[in-house]
Image (cartoon, rainbow, N blue to C red; front, side, top):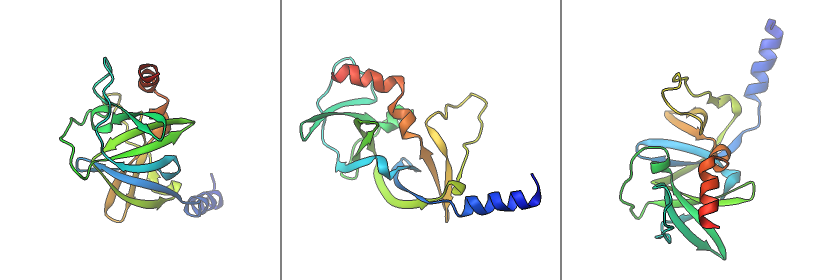
Length: 166
């Protein structure tokens, strides 16, 4: 790649259209998901338990006639569980026609990120599973883990949820 091509590529990255992301916390870490996938944000309410489901499936809620599975992302991401507080929220997502709720510690902000601001996740040589991470983004002094919510929603675990709640 010659110098002119490199400068053009850098300019294209810097001028890329920014996308908006909803940020939320799990423990001391901040995560981000594409805001276009967010249907609504709700306070935590005790879901109806479904027998014989994995621990990360907290149950289901009835959302205006739609049965919505609720997944605790802390447990799904192996971050341990905590007691839910008044700040605990459920983010209702709609990805490819699938509606699911994810339990997070709190919602932080809505931010705009360009593709150039999102860097690939480090390669941990297979010792750490990064399949649900699109990349890492930094903004001011904040570092966020950009979550691949589409991959999460189409994983085998989500197929399990659908069969358990059908």
